[in-house]
Amino acid sequence: MNKKVLAAGVAIGLVVGVFFGMATFKFAAPTMLFKEVQVNYSFEKTLDLLVHNINAQKGWQVTDVIDQQAAVIGYAPTMQKVKIVKFCNPEYAAKMLSNDATKVMAVQMPLSIAVFERNDGRIMLGLSNGYMMSRLFAGSARGEIMQGVIKDMEQILSFINFRYSMF
Image 1 (tube, rainbow, N blue to C red):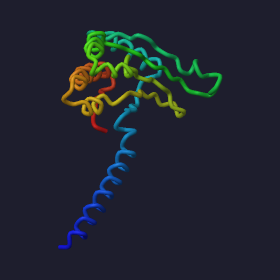
Image 2 (cartoon, one colour; image 1 turned 30 degrees about the vertical axis):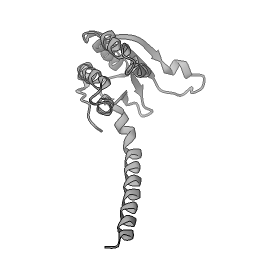
Image 3 (cartoon, one colour; image 1 turned 45 degrees about the horizontal axis):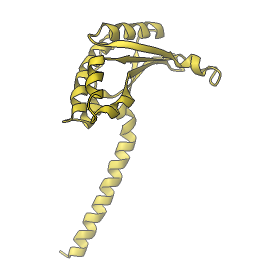
Image 4 (cartoon, one colour; image 1 turned 180 degrees about the horizontal axis):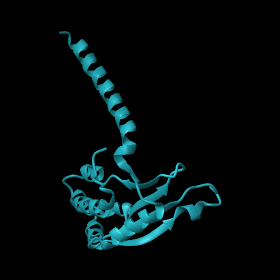
């Protein structure tokens, strides 16, 4: 076989592979990085359950509940309810923030879960996909800490039978 033909075939295969890989990531990224979960409770009941479960989980505490609807009502007068629950575990935070290699994760702290109402009345939770984040950092101190966070998060979200997954 001619070396030029082989080299051209490898180059074309590489370009096509990279293109399809990037396209796949582009379409999969929204569900890979963020989770949107429908809840079968009212907005208020969902918010109450979430706050209660966070505060009941050993080591975790709600630090703030932000009413996004109230904050932007002048710009979006017909916006549905949106509240963001901010919460933290000081033990995990201390591990993450005491190491220079993991301090950059402060950008993700405290953790957040959004409770929101869609225009059709469905109540949803929006959260980061902790499983994907832990896989991205597997084998590092960040990944180990995130594994503990994932277990706690699944317990906190047990009222909706939530489990993290790849997609």
